[in-house]
Image 1 (spheres, rainbow, N blue to C red):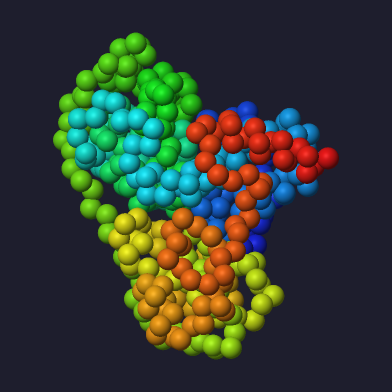
Image 2 (image 1 turned 180 degrees about the vertical axis):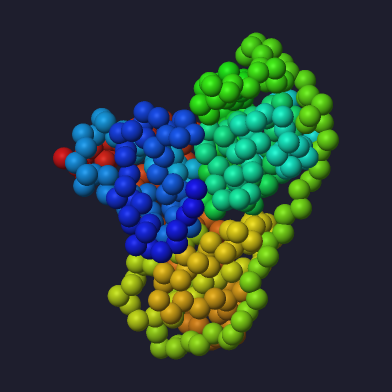
Length: 372
């Protein structure tokens, strides 16, 4: 799977959405998924933009509800991050069960777990920066339930490689699988993996997951997963190639890893600055592939300039007037100064909800009222 970075190609991908088919087969590795997640995560497009595109396609609400619900999940994870802040970096609802170590199995890093579908998915992750959502769940299950890893380090490893890395979606989904953000852990045996990866013709048998769910619930760590390590994750930040050219009479628009929207104030004559903060990427490291993807997406923004450094230094060194600074809201932008602008959420529903379906109930009601 390749992810083009030209904005026109991204819009073409939105137009190609098959929301009804998505609701029926998204859990299969060859299902009609949209491959839009990297663009939503990088803030090139929004959940609202995608939702409105589907509405314009004229489908009945009930036929596309599963698709819209999945968009709502993205907003839901973000709302939890906004409400809980750094608390999402630890067990959110209860201590993760079955934890025996704080590392990651070496065989997961090397894609030699002995579970063929998972090993192939990890290799694809390294090559393309993408992993199907069901395979992410399988990998997390293998790490947390079978190997006994606490979810945090493995989640960092996966986030490091994902082009669609969104820390809220990633961390809270790992916690959901691990059982620290839900009332039970998620498990899947070899039969389930064979089904959703279409391995019926060459179904893997005899693996340590080729057992009943009753036995899987109490499985001990197999030999294949015993060796553990802490993955080395360091962000290869781009160098500052040239000084910024700033017109202090114009507004300054601050873009970052979570906001690369080329249409944001596109009509405005402004300084457009992609801010890459070393402190951010020290806490949430990403790979060279992710950095290259970010920089390539930024090329859709006319006259964008790259600044590697922290926000305070950017303001002081270039004498930016805070009242002329604009930026989009995000949990990692709390130290920014200037005019914070609301992101394009799919609905106006905000705040913390302990369950997705409590959140979804309010979102669905609003969307129905808006449509009518």
